Image (cartoon, rainbow, N blue to C red; front, side, top):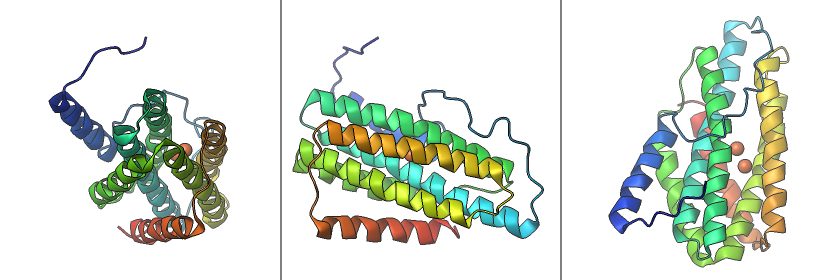
Length: 215
Ligand SMILES: [Fe+2]
Ligand SMILES: [Fe+2]
């Protein structure tokens, strides 16, 4: 059912803080899709392989925290209500990825990035700014983000220990979903971003990827 309630600025601030805390601490809204690795047996990994898988999944979890923050930030400053709703819906769909990565990290006996609050705040600011530039550029930003995430996930799958089918299945489903998100944004009227902006986006995401692998 569509929510028609009108919120005051104070309500919106409280809802925003609530969304942020839920994204950072692993309780974000999801569509409740089933876990892609549900029927896959736990592989027999060496301690080193287990650490490698967990570090990669920590990076992907941090990436999904960033995705939540980007979409929440973009939703705040989107001008048209249908774009605002699209950003909020995108965040809920990304919530599935966040929950899957979180579960896999727990299965591997490891922890999520200690810097998740920082990733969230930085990405929220970027999303907020992208929304201010205008809806078609905000959608262009979404499309470019998804495009870079697809390439990143393909690389991450190559780095996984070959016997870790569980993590592989999660990343494979995420790759399919992110490609679809890109398509949806393009169909909704995304503008092509200048190449300098794309390079800057790639640089900032690499900072997160390299750091979250360790902490
Ligand atoms: Fe995602
Ligand atoms: Fe996505």
